[in-house]
Image (cartoon, rainbow, N blue to C red; front, side, top):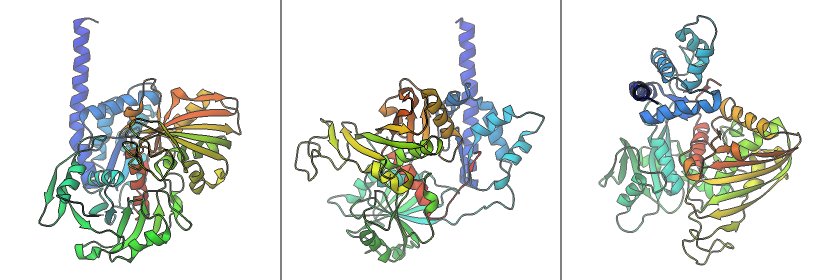
Length: 482
């Protein structure tokens, strides 16, 4: 490549970066003022850097064969700013690409009016009542949920994190809680500013006042004393899993509903995998479970395959990062094998995820077996689905179906897809999808298919939990275009 050609390549990069920089304030304004969450082919670009935006545009080549022109997306975003929009999730990448393919002389304004008619004008729902949220427990999932709720500050923030309830620790408890929220060894630093209000025993994160309340049991705190009402309590402790235990939360003034971030125990609590059976949540469901990270990862893919091809039976093997339940060094543990040092061993253990699938997808009851291997990584896991289908399939056919499902279906928020030949577990850290299908590892022979499905068992699961939270309080934003 000549020097002149190199200069042109560099200038093209600078031009695209400049457009991305001009997009940032518009993206932020649409979110803060209108509650519009923008994406590019499923990649969120709210609170993103210019480089993140450019990478999202390049990602489009996996689906369309060419990189999306950022100038086309910019034109869509500028036009969106002129429209009277209701809160929604909009994929501006799809809108830009579809407009470029559209035949005829239709204007961009008319095209968007046709595509987004349901959220434009007086007939669209403009204001949603904010709902109070209280996190009961502040461990790995609790802190990630806090980050996700805080990043939504603005008009689109209809889930307001008002308080966390924890057992008081020794020493400077408040400062330590704030420090753990501020820094994370896996997910990096908090994106914003955190201060401690010792006088009011609170953490202030990006302007959000979060009261820290000390209690050992659910239902013993009067939340109304802190101005909190009709709150959704998210129990992250894992200590209570049945109706009797979780029901204690509802005895406390100010609490209205409870969401468990773990599989439920006993009967009477719906296990919800968002995207699969969230539509079964009714107004009278006061206590709901968001199931497990693995169940959330595998159920959407299993549903898609069962709907398209039918599943005779299968086995699910999870290669799972170690968790806080295991020991750092060899020590006593009530469970078999889990007492051995987690950072040093692969540990075969049991998982209820395969059976739990049937709670969200009853048609697969009794058809799946499962096991797990805990491995010495702190986050991101892998599910290997070995399935016998009712149809004969090829690798290309299955991969193409899952690629399209990840982009153009009701499961697009749950199923992501990669064609990379180089991807490894750390590349999945921070994924907002329930799972990522590794298409290069797919095996298909006759009616038998083996799929490798990555998932961030912390962050991706937390994103699923937030979606269930929104459903429980009636915040259902349209996802356009389909």
